[in-house]
Amino acid sequence: MKKIHKFANLAAVILPFAAFLVAIPLLWNDYVGWTDLAIFGVMYVLTGFGVTVGFHRLLTHRAFETSRPIKYTLTALGSMAVEGPAIVWVADHRKHHTFADEEGDPHSPHVDFGDGWRGAARGLWHAHMGWLFDEQGRAQAKRFARDLLADDGLRFITKKFPAFVALGLLIPFLLGLALTQSLAGGLTALLWGGFVRIFLLHHVTWSINSVCHFFGRRRFDTDDHSTNVFWLALPSFGESWHHNHHAFPTSAKHGLRWWEVDTSALLIGLLERLGLAWNVVKVAPERQQAKLASAQPSRVAA
Image (cartoon, rainbow, N blue to C red; front, side, top):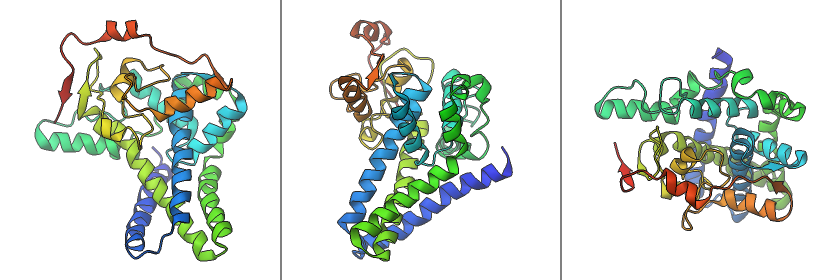
């Protein structure tokens, strides 16, 4: 990884974290209003779906098909989450599935970190954030994302990633400015709808790499350490049913039981009902039954 990429990743980690530290006393002292929180919520949902529905289920796993305008809109929103350029993100994630929890997986917490609590801590750190500084972006796009390289629109959005990052900060600032008619309102909206939103969405996404390969429950026969973690389901838009996802990577729905809340799947289902999504991949109950592990569902812990 080039030094400039390492510095960019470091900035993407530190700046939202610093903003979060600033936001805590502001919230405590009532320097944040409902306008800021509403802008935060809207931006969190839009950019979160950009990652989960756009980057992950559409681009990476082709769990459904949609029109180019919707595909490019989701990709643009995912870029505003500041988790990396679209094609780079997809290549890294496809590499993760190719080598899941084995040598070559860019962010497994289980490869060569030693035994005991120290090894577990090193592995979790690497899976959560450490991989950003030595593994992110090393997956060859020509090998892992050749189909996306053939799409002019996706190449353009990937190339203009810094512009979409800036747009993801400009939008909450302008919304706050317009709704409050004050510069202070624009700045606090930028803080919450921009930097704090990025910080929280980052750590929810990174928790899928770390927590959901270390703690939680399993029920399918898979060759990795993926787990389902129920308490992350809402903030991750259903991504934390990660074991289900590893069992059936192309499924548009990760929450396979009625109580496994998966808002990303709900959005895809809505698009399908509106005729805006098609060829949605669904896993029949019989196929799920055939892949169940021979033992009862197991709990994984450190």
